[in-house]
Image (cartoon, rainbow, N blue to C red; front, side, top):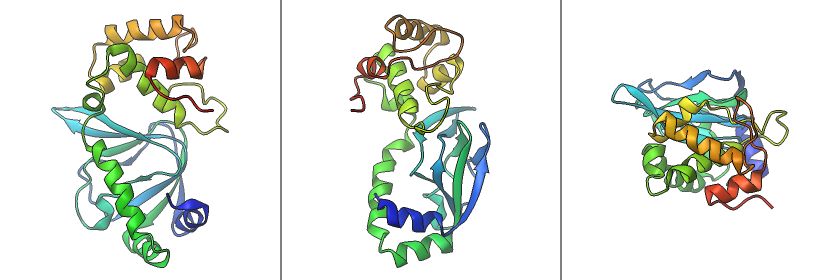
Length: 212
């Protein structure tokens, strides 16, 4: 939404930080006051509900995380965990406010926040009206779509079957059945890891539009 010039100015306003896979960038209930602009890599946004963590959304390069609580001393509504190695730019509230003022970007931020409000409900609720196969395929497709094209293992889905089951609110055995279907269709490759073998086949199972 910002365009290349404004995005370059944004990531030049803070401090770059590298994150390893599995690292938490933010934790639920921590105080706000800063945010992250994702330069590369993918993260998952999680919320603790009923003693377990549920998936709210996935974000990748070009996204902001922690932007809701960056506007004051409010508490974080969710945790953010790196799916793979990530690079981000950390901006304090004053730095972000200065960027918005200098680049006339307050309206763009408002549009961005409105677009992200739907992600305050669990991912499993967002996909409630889909069948089991389409739900698994859509999550795999979304994760794959956020991968950096320069990433050497971008075809790998960095979720275990157990993690997919938890994210979608499904039994692990049901997820295993859907993975078997996706493998037999050629969308996913064989082997213990989840690897996209045919992006268009996966998009078809997900009911999504494949990249041109």
